[in-house]
Image 1 (cartoon, one colour):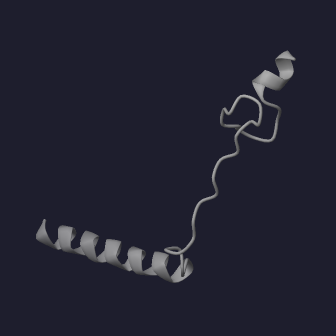
Image 2: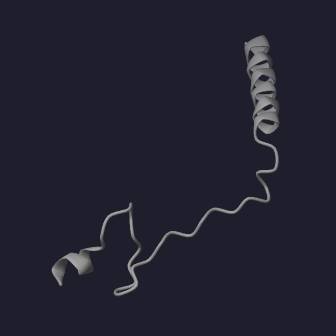
Image 3: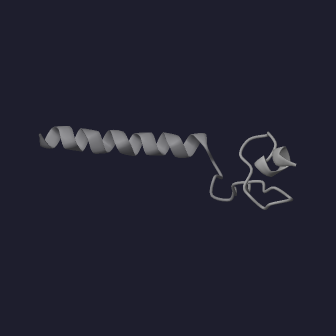
Length: 56
């Protein structure tokens, strides 16, 4: 049982090291802010129109 746990922890460490190698510099990147509707101020999801634009 102890061997299984140590093997699992070593495998997780190896996966973490490969993950860091694939995506260097992710610390400095910021996520883009979600767009808001200019009329009502709601958050827009996707590229379609806002619900307030469909009503008018």
